[in-house]
Image (cartoon, rainbow, N blue to C red; front, side, top):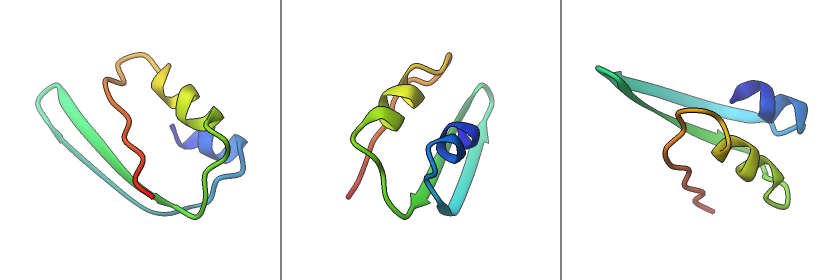
Length: 55
């Protein structure tokens, strides 16, 4: 996920990753997002079940 953000020049200001058993989640605080390309690319990663963007 971070490589996708770096490739699209999205700066991550803070990141939290928590997991329990076979399930984990990431919370990323980024400076700005693009027009949705990054969102779609992350959604297409194998085993990603949900993506939520909060503005």
